[in-house]
Image 1: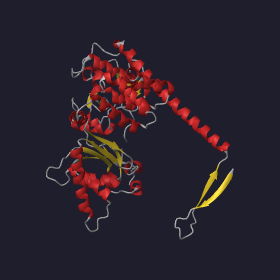
Image 2: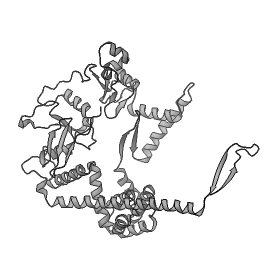
Image 3: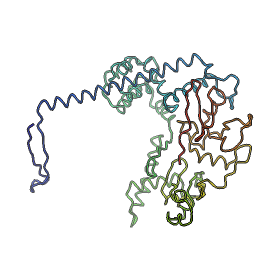
Image 4: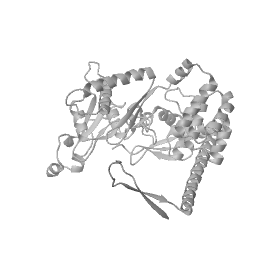
Length: 440
């Protein structure tokens, strides 16, 4: 292998100590490198074919399950709300079963089946490149299926021709832009029609991150969000001009946006109920050695982390601040000797608010494994129904999302208490899944 040494001067008037080795590889070295990249590409194509095979298997299993509704539906049970049609209920039950088999969320399992059917039936050549050749990644295949799903079927052939001619090799983000632009051109929608369709998808999304941080995303009308951004910028720039202000402009924007959304200090400040759970000795700043001297288990008294409902673990300073002065937070201290939550009643036939609060804290989300709906937005269900002498206590109560609650009462899924924690659910095909581990 031949080696040449080149010296690059950062300042043309001054010699530099920076030196970079530039290697001239022999042809055999380059050939070996190309061979390793060939193997990398082959494995990527194999992964795409495997993903397509899984999508197809899910779609086939769903189609098969539809032919045997008696496996899933319980004709003797009643929908607690009386709002779910038999066909819709069957679809929910089948997808839930698929999700349990594959350890997926219901949303992911449904998307997998829908995308396979969409591509096979509407974009067969693209499906072939995905399933047989593996030259389209699973991410790109998902983009194509999602875009074409809402498009009139008579445009499928023209749309597919453009994707084959211009979409090969594009990463999913650029492919999505091309696909939407192509669809809009073929649909010949007016600008107002496109705006009306897009505006139907406006939403707010919260994504918890590590170290006490999170993203809050807002998808909505551009004119409204530009005005909101201008207000945030103006307030942040005003604060940045104050003597002694140490925060960066980005930090000020984030703080200003939070204050505006929470209406901090305003007469119309919104006061939601948010739970923050803190070991009581930790609030007081009790040291580990002090707890040991008092005969209290320090792991319970001081090591137990503070937790914010809907997020998870938070730092001590934030916990003390929220617990001490924030009126929008329901404060729940924990017993330093046992770590159990204090003053929560469970004595009524219908779950009391105290019991609901306790279950919300205990589970965090829906008690069904794989479901991320916050427990505070779930139904509180008796695992053993009240009519069958099921007691109203935390050992027989669990938060279940509306869809899961309906499935429990109207299908052949079996719900039982798990000896360790929460629920154990058995599907009509025998698959079991338990409640996800508690948040703390």
